[in-house]
Image 1: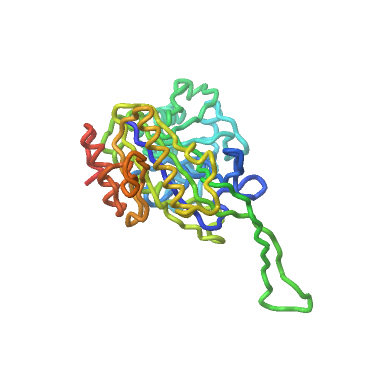
Image 2: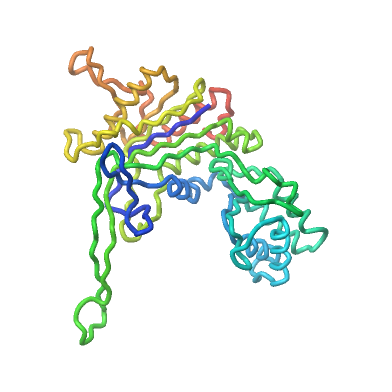
Length: 388
């Protein structure tokens, strides 16, 4: 079963995800420059959000190169600084196991481990019992049910040897989530904000105390996420209830969480104006509707930027569904049903041409929308605990 999420989200002026020069990320699509938010940025904002924490409970994943210090802090006990001998012992286990170092307490690769594994390794160091290498390998090798790792995957690989010899190939977790880079439905030109900071205590020197520039843009984005529910269950040791809870938390976080880039300067906290969810029980083929915007939405259109973007999404989705016979249960949300997701049936009279893409499954309240999506997952043989 696939759960596909499509969103239309318009952001006020912002710099949510910047490149190496500090400018908002862009790309060329359909022959014009588009605003872009990378999939990595989107996934991190969701993974670290309050909404997604409901799925993580107390065992969220930690992605870091500074595992030595984290384990040493656990070994020292709450409120105590890490001990030098603990750091040395932990460092030796990992270097003997084939992990390289950037400096004495920082690895040259990122580890993505559940908090429970870090706690257990800290306890093993603190108690000082047995062979640390064997203990660490046993702890890391456990299959730990962690929603964010199950969704996003883990690609930690190194030349495992010594105490970690038996862990070769076990660090990798196949991601259940595919996330597209969000791109604007229209052409975009980055703008420059020239700003100054005045000195509150004026002196003889005239002018501003600080002068700088910052780039920004404003764009209406199309976002697309795909969750492979069978892979998610597999990554969570076939815990279907936790898999449902993870999907629900992800859907809520995808709609409500925003990237944090320069938000203190721009406050672009704009929720989506439209969310389409497709639950595919018969087809395992994901379909992106990005090409609905291959021809950019014009600056001025009769429906407005958001309305025209949603109209194009509806028509293109309908065309592909009919053309390829794509079977799915579809659900549409727009706040207070500001926008419907429709297609034009030209065989009908003019005032009857606009038809719903999702039939009667249109919702103006987000909680109701999420409930219906989860309920549908429950009726397809998956426990509906997350819908309660």
